Amino acid sequence: MTELHLWLRHEPRTTERRTPVVPADARRLVDSGVALTVEESPQRIFPTEEYEAAGCRRAPAGSWMAAPRDTVILGLKELPDEPDELVHRHIFFGHAYKQQPGATGLLRRFAAGGGALLDLEYLVDEAGRRLAAFGYWAGYLGAALAVLRHRDRLTAPLTPTTKDDLDAVLRQAPGDTEFTALVIGALGRSGRGASTAFRTAGVEVTRWDLAETRDLDRRALLGHDVMVNAVLATTLVPPFLREEDLHSPARRLRTLCDVTCDVGSPFNVLPVYDRTTDWAEPVRRLREEPPLDLIAIDNLPSLLPRESSTDFSAALLPQLLAFGPGGAWGRCLDRFHQTCRELGIEEGESRS
Ligand SMILES: NC(=O)c1ccc[n+]([C@@H]2O[C@H](COP(=O)([O-])OP(=O)(O)OC[C@H]3O[C@@H](n4cnc5c(N)ncnc54)[C@H](O)[C@@H]3O)[C@@H](O)[C@H]2O)c1
Picture: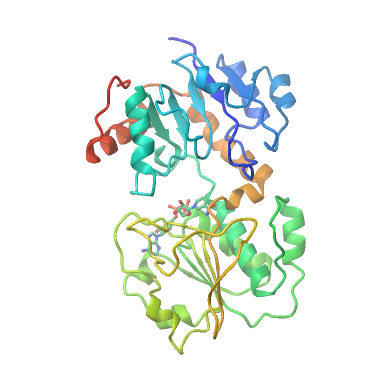
């Protein structure tokens, strides 16, 4: 079997401090015979030196473009806009299979170069369950930011922190135990994280999942002060909130945090806003009288980069050690080919 050469790339997004593989797990890969190149990255939470000490090779940021063709490029979020043709297999979150804006363009770049997207969101076991995900920390952060906003204690821009520091702020309860919070998608990873953060902040939480939204009670939804949406939508369902609901006199809802951030997708269950928020301006006022504030940040776990990377890396490590044509990676590749076919994108010489 040829040696696997993994290449951990620098993330172009300046706020992205996470990594899919932490130095301790890099050492496990190297010890198992994987060649691991790590690009220099000024913002990655773990210094490149720690990877070098673990036996990794060091390379300049962005040098993956010139890596040997058989190298598997590993990252988390979006690739830079260049090159037009992607010749490698790339492991990352492509956000390209739910008709998101830019999805077809990205897949065309792979098809043009003969490369392939091995999308981490679709790295699943035989039962279709995700094998590595950041959801828990996304939910935790989403609820934490919503609480801080609701208590008028959120300061911008947001900066990465640690769980201990975040929890200390959340526990400074200003005696507002009367406010109510709703988490939808409560049984999932993000939903569990959100519920835990609300409890840390001393806030009562109502937890809804599929059973509670089948026959959606929007009046009950609007009766909560704070709501966190943490669903993973894979089918079309009626929206949880529509424009007309925001005008309802029954609305107590003041703070809405959309962890799911499916804006632009047909599966979006919150079609009441048209663009996400970010670390610089985490909150957007959707309505004045009475106020409704939105938080919709699509890289929440990056705010706790050390904790979220460590958990993710622990889950991804066994999959990387088992990297090969079948199993979970085979399913990932099948999904890529299937989506290209569905979108009418003709693949050239992509690996089968
Ligand atoms: N904003 C961010 O930074 C960020 C980071 C990671 C994940 N996410 C997103 O968060 C979402 C949740 O991810 P996860 O890992 O928790 O997924 P998950 O699969 O662990 O959980 C999703 C939950 O949603 C529930 N659900 C699905 N449809 C529902 C509906 N119509 N009504 C009620 N519940 C419903 C499911 O039953 C499940 O319990 C995903 O869309 C994911 O892409 C966002």
